[in-house]
Length: 333
Image (cartoon, rainbow, N blue to C red; front, side, top):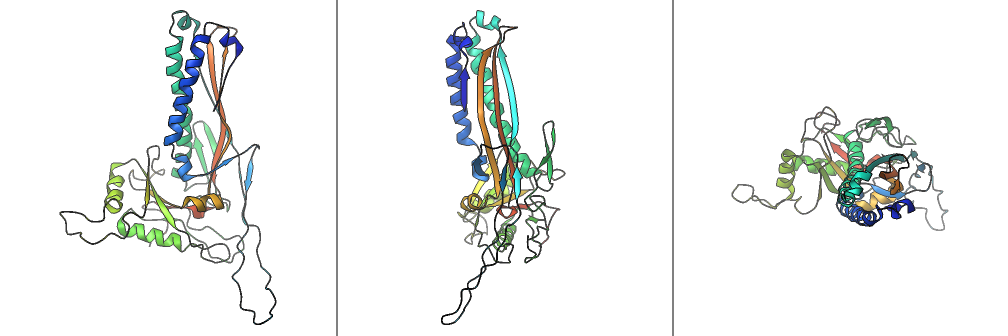
């Protein structure tokens, strides 16, 4: 985050309150960054360009037995699908009147409103990321007043779809959308499906999912923590050891809702280990311009205006990074 306070502010009576406001805003920003779920779910990228293009190459085929002094078989690979992500521009401002400054209240008001500005910035980021997931069965989404935001995967399909194609036709269509309500058995079914995912050439990718994402809903939280939170269930007949105990990270994303038209507390998501997501740019978040705040005196009103601006964007690139369990939709096992 960058905060710039103009000379006009520092030279005026606002100057005494400007620096404390700045320090409070910086502290508030650090607190939000520590608890953000975005870096735990997205592959984080920085950019200095208007847009960024992501692509990949299909894998090299398996080694072959060639016999003594045999020739090296030529690798057959090609460029895969590509995805262009455009960072969006976000803005908001607040002002402190000269009257409040004259009454000695500029500092307290500035801290309060400055904190709200930072809250709004980070809340918007969390909502933008979570809205992408809850609209993951579509190829576009609406965010605020902005419609038609492109959230399709590189293959042109929705993030969650039953018919993701391979770029060269060597693998039949694959699904990462399953008609599965969360349970012990269904968790194992989805994990197995994810581990069996193939690349464009038909090779298994040896994926190892390790994280479950759920909304802050008491119904699904109870199910998830019952399955994953204990090895045994004291006082019941369930005394067998749990295969899933201690194997999963659980992210309860308070900003995450339910997909459009879905019953609350039913949908859940499974994601790959963070290393895979980083290496293959699965679900991508691009920070173009960090939150930049500037302060100045308005020539017409003499009010101290604080403006916040930044640019970022997010979209799925490779669908293999995440699977969704949405009861009533997708592949039935």
